[in-house]
Length: 585
Image 1 (tube, rainbow, N blue to C red):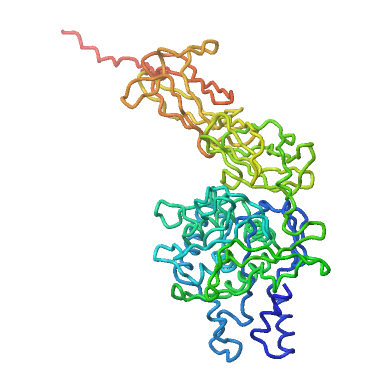
Image 2 (cartoon, rainbow, N blue to C red):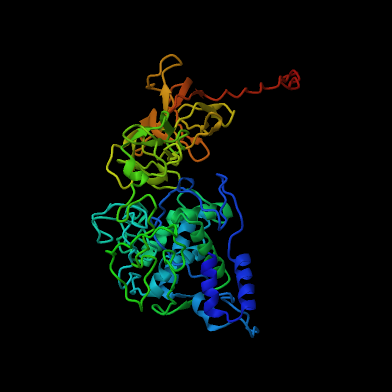
């Protein structure tokens, strides 16, 4: 990064003292401090994480080149009273083309709804868009957000870049031999295949459309339930996009710059970056000075010098060479040595619908001789008709093998569809024997069922029960939501056949029914049964409720005439005696 800083300062600073101050300011304000993620990885500018320490070693871009230009030193949104340090460069750099800016903000709004815990800021998408393609080449997009001309990265043929053989038959990048990063956010085709989104509602998922690409980038950055308001998670997400600490520092510089202020500018008028990460005048050559390796002829198309492209600019890199590698040959990559994949001890995979699987899938990359192969990208894909996904909602996850050749997939999250689920592990860039894992999603269950009330349930013949039957279901002490249940008026405690008399429910037509199936507990595990009625039969009756998982509860119902009122006996009185008539005389 020091070379980049120096080059930038030479463009705008004329004195040694000012240059030194600017370097100090950049180092203090733009480079992220030393942080450590959950795996103990340092993310300072002089500590490059190894691919197996990130969620996806090749990232969204296949680790394609990117623009290394840094933000201006002056504020993007200077105070009106400021009289110095507010040259036109800062104003221009802070401006984002109107359509591109709108796409970033709409993607943020969509992620706020679908994944609110991610806390994705649109300024992060703007920072990545700046670094990847210079905001779609300064906003050269049509009214729908599609780039006026394709933005393609160099072919990833292992010649100075990663080796990623063609995965899309050239559908996105026009290259049927090797993959190339595509569009304003520079997705490689194999990543776009599962990460692509329709951001502008036209029914298509087009990596060349800024609305689609921005929304896809947002989902990509949020796919592992990362909270981007947390610096550790933010670092992980950015590194997963392109696994380079210099890339992290550059994106963070633009993120902080855009957070201080930005504004809308007309499409096509944005400032185009100049410096790229594969620029040999900036990047020191890894070749030992005493060894000279002739450059290889480039097969990549040239780009007009007056129109810098996105991070997919076709400027060929210098041949790195190696004292032990003959000129003109490419040493085998770790991927080239993989012969097959093996299950790395995955346990039985079973989970209840809606729950996360406690066990995780792991695969081991091996040579033909059975030797472990590190730093190989393994793609885990959930296949078939299922809504089970990896944590974060994606059906595909790419993980790099560690030093033991093992790649551990993210945890699986069971959907609502029950039954078998198949997850397939394959080697990215090779057609070798993979591994198919079988998982099982069982229906939601309860192991305990209790009444929420204690009042006796009584009714008069031909009447209706005044109190409803409400139950609560739990599983291992936790609320059992969305659990199916069946309620039946049974003949007796020993005979669970349906009774033909006594209390009953009513169907939609008002007819008496004594069995209800398809009942479901709510989000709190509660199950409130419909109104109960009674026929003219008196007695004690039983209502039995059974849930998936075997929880059962029997409730007593009583149908009886109300007790007769006791009549108050009339008080005893001595009849009044009429005066005796006097005898006639």
